Image (cartoon, rainbow, N blue to C red; front, side, top):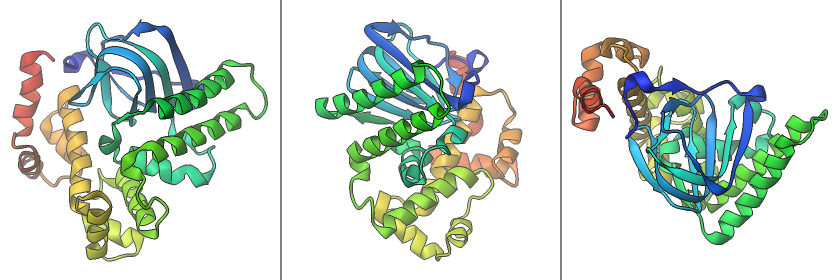
Amino acid sequence: MIKSITDVRQEKDLIDSFSVKYYGTDPFLAEPSPYRLTYHRILLISNAEGSLYIDDQAFHINGNDLFLIAKGQMTGFNEGTKFSGFELSFGDCFWERSPSSANNCKAVLFSNVANNQKISLSDKDYHEIAALFNALFHEFSGPGYVSKLDAMAAYLKIIMIKIANVNAALTKGTDSYEHKLYRDFLELIGQNYQSSHEVGDYAALMGISSRKLTDLSKKCSGKGAKELINELLIAEAKRALQFSSRPVKEIAYQLNFSTPDQFSHFFKKNTEISPQDYRLQFVNSGI
């Protein structure tokens, strides 16, 4: 498992908020120390042996796997894990260089990333996406020129659109008006969930009723609007409890709960365990 709170590191700053790394045909021995991501990350794995941890979930990795990991999430590898493939990292400021026509792909894939954390690819899809990664890697590794960042952003746009197209969860009605509203909702949650917990707040921002937003969420995801908001709150609360030593009281206020008791009740209702006991699970086991 991911190690204890004190072992967690922060991801290093990237020049131009962008990086592509290639780990060749000989499997690369991954560093097990966990860290919190400052940038969004896409891992395209061709060959692997071991496990990848994202927040409190473990994923066995083989090959033809694609992982989407959002900024703020904790990630690390099990001791002895080896893999070959690509590691792409980008910040929101770099993404802004990408044409706006790709924004919906990023919103759906990364705003509620837990639903798209791992995508298993067919051989055909893997080779098509790997070819795009390879072209981007050579662009990134080559000499600089005036429009290089814009060219890399264009490659990133194509990669995101391709990933969205092969993700089975995104293939139904992607271009419909209702799915566009749903993607807008996911993006708003990702931007505001720490300060705004109520469905009505998001419905007002979108100019629709709370009932319509709830019905829309259920139709597009099988989950109610409130459930989607709560999922992001719980995910952030778990990260803070597991990978920081901040008091529960401080975490409660950071997530905009009125009192620590209100936060504890919310956390236990959604996880069946108190915040203190959740943290102790990791502290006592040293994971």
